[in-house]
Length: 266
Image 1 (cartoon, rainbow, N blue to C red):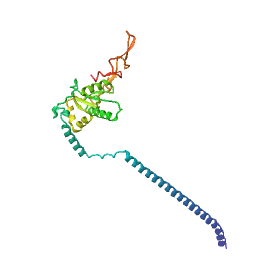
Image 2: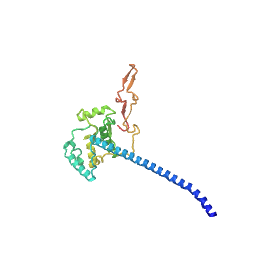
Image 3: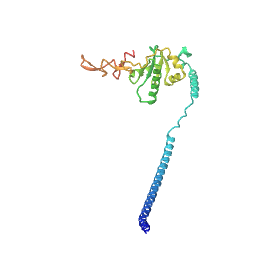
Image 4: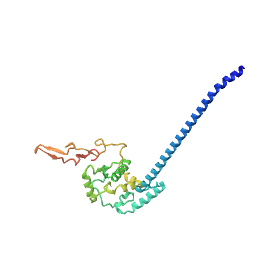
């Protein structure tokens, strides 16, 4: 009897547990269904966004193909060497205008000379970035010569218009391209000629006879700019005439109120 009573007591207690288990399983199923639907909708929205992004990417590529030129393939080092050799042969076969240096197999028949510069390298250039291609050519030529640590007489036409007039007189042309290089008074050419000589190794032979500067050398007077403010008018380009009581134009400086650095441009 005692065991039957215990069983009766256990059975009623077990029924609520079954109800709780059933309700919890139903809740878990609803949560699972809800989370699965959310995941499915998220995947659908992600796929739609990815598809729209891919279609937009394709449209952008089509537009780029209309307005941009195809990128050139990088040549092999062997091909570059062959091209440089062909360029050197064409460079030597251009005639007497490009045959400058007799001691290195070139004939000096240049008719264009810059008087008073037989002991130096003169480069006419510009430091303004108005025309990107011109500035890049001037910068490239300047860096090539600086890499050899040789002193060059840089004549910046943007700092002094007298240099431009001087170059026009020497070349006999009104519209001159920059840069223009003169070595020992002989006109060598522009950026393409200097780059070609540098690539083929001819520039090294030409510059062997020029003295080298110390690494990191900078002029203390101008800091490498080649110009300093005029000491007579302090860069104002005006002087007061005490006798006449009026301002007059300073004749010692250029249109920018600058003079050539006496330390590095003598």
